[in-house]
Amino acid sequence: MNIDMVRDALLWCAVINYTLLLVWFLFFTLAHDWMHRFHGRWFHLPVERFDAIHYTGMALFKLGIILFNLVPCVALYIVA
Image (cartoon, rainbow, N blue to C red; front, side, top):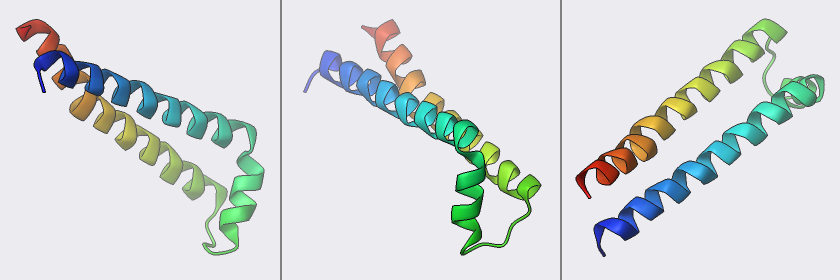
């Protein structure tokens, strides 16, 4: 396994993760009421708390993508 393969793998991981984040965001914005009702069966959360949990989750997921996929990929591009 060489640097090019690792760099390509990290880049594809970032693309896949950002796609999942985009799907999550679109699902959250376009099907918000349905998601709240669906999760409301198990967790009795007010809408404001539900929104805060999802936005926090999206922010943490995005931060993880940046820290674990994009930064190492950029570092490998600089090194190579």
